[in-house]
Image (cartoon, rainbow, N blue to C red; front, side, top):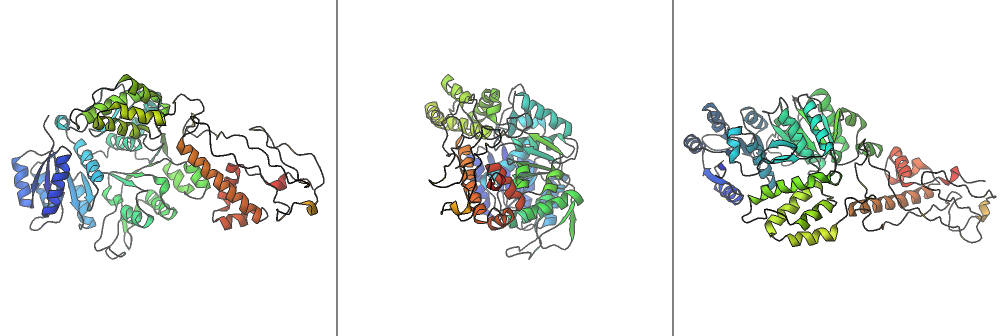
Length: 543
């Protein structure tokens, strides 16, 4: 099979050399042009599958190259590269037919993703030359392009596919929910590919990758001189996604201040660049994704409730891989075919014991972890190394006590199952009574009614409400009943419980005062008290 031919157009020799080496090592056939005129000559006399085009070049700009290439009937995807192009140039490039826009400097993975997306937009007659992924023959395949597919035979993913087909051609916002690695970005691209905006840009922004100040500039752009280092105006991702789709990944990580600006864009379809005095109007479909429980984040004061309801017009929950184990084998076959083409003498078939281990493993990293594991197999060419790794970290997928993030039919997490705590006995000679912890789900068992004298309170308590709480259960759990990630979450919750309890005792159980000292909202504190199972002793103590 012929390799993909990529033309790199840049007036800087160092950039051409770097890209030629990078793409050549990735399996592409690379040719370079140092000027716009040379690029047009090469494009007219040769066949290229993609073009990486710098915007700022002497004599003939990248935009002029793009215009002439499209006017002559050129159809290859063009990815625009620039560090200095103004907002208008970037937007014009996208509207003139550029497949994507990449700002310098960029990472290797970012370039690989953008190039894979651009190659996937080609006509079907040319898709056979794409070496990235072969089309998988699976019972159910959601295909975005040749670089990304979502393979599934499970009923849950079939329902997700049906919902995608129903809402893709509408312009309603979509909220994608699920753990990391379950395929939220794949679904977002499928929504775009099936919509009327399919021929317009698809722009992805990872909200967790940048701090708030930089994320605001990335989303909404900035004017020249808006801040130190802003030497030129820059278009935001919303502008680049005009008429297309913008995908906001990890939306739960966005700062509250930026959430207000995002809400304005959703409501009014306009915004101000950083340092700008003139509003910018855009028409972008918004798809967001998160692995967080946004309702819980609202209670904690970390996410705006009005933004949540604006985004949650249509919600699609993607189950973790451990809840659709029937997909492990077809996914494994698919990734073996994919990476078998990248690595010479790679693994073409897995031994039965490795495949059995795959079907028994818990896959906390979901499909992404499975893909990386198969890739490692193709590189190492020794299944026993991966088998040993799986045996060391295996959690049987069939274990009934395994906690799952989206186990219920409604997609909500199940209630935590924790060991019953032992009650703390009061010091000898104290008249304090202990509130016995009831069986799970029952009401507190009241102590025998006795007279409580303030003078008899043990010296180690500073006020009559410092009645000892039952200690939190230990963070350790039996092996095989809880994943390492869940153990970490539980340990964090226990630490929060102790801190909240100590502050409540210091403030004589004045919750508003305790919330202020803990620097959280009153509503968030009430939620935490309930979540941690903290009991207010004044509600049960007899005087």
